[in-house]
Image (cartoon, rainbow, N blue to C red):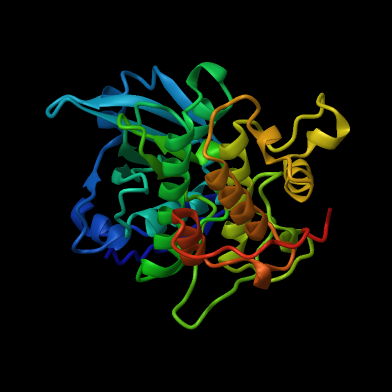
Length: 331
């Protein structure tokens, strides 16, 4: 596990790292003695990305470019943080601390970094099949039913690892299809840890401003209540409904009763019309009912009503019975 100790100073609005005697000691201060992460210079990453030529993604704090490490011919994704003030600096620290100390098949792997001068960049393994959003919301890329079930279980395993199997418990805070990347084998991997919250050993909740993306944010955030791992469970529930239906959680040009996915899904469940969620697609109806019931439990308004990710995974795998979920109160 990485031990990250970042010392900052602030002068005006520009943030920087504490000066140390050498590049090696600076790296140790940033990521810890036992790190396997590679330290890159900005010039190296400029060459690796061919002058940051091919943009493959963009987020709130930065842009992601495709690159190739010439000595190994390894494809990588290089995330360059655009904001050099407090927000961008904070995301760099958070992402280093969160994903730098994790290793799981359903998490995107951090390979290296650059923190020279004002530059803040992160180097990740390259995901050749884009994001889950690219697969779900483009008809030509739509995964078949069994593959969607496998994707859902993979995401659940990744979140479970963050919540219960890391040395430091992590709340991702921004689970959504755009942050689920797909490798060449179409294995789902959670990415973008810039908004994550790392909990102390004696901590189960934290206060924070609203994070995440509209449509995936748990209700307690809007009420300025403490945030727990159950916020990620809520977001997963919304994503699970999108995986089931291969559509976004809100489409305003649909009929009113279908526009908001979670409302439509509960209505279909309550009225015994679950097949409406998948149209003419041939699916296992028992699996469909199981997945919808899991999703509806995950999006309960009261956090304590939502299952843990361990329970979610067991329910998805069909190893435990799933009680009938109540109507989420905010409908």
